[in-house]
Image (tube, rainbow, N blue to C red; front, side, top):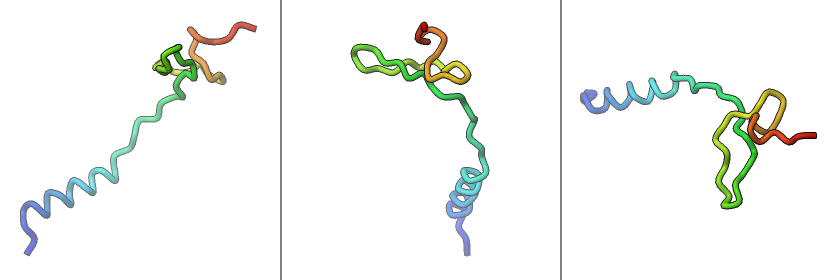
Length: 56
């Protein structure tokens, strides 16, 4: 006999397998002097966001 708890855990496990993760772009590679990462999304075809993009 399958208990209610067992049924619930198997349903949760099945749901975890089917849910898709949201696809996001790469994050900016810039870091502060303290070592913290920039949390902005990188510009298309670049490693850096528009704020940290290197001028050439």
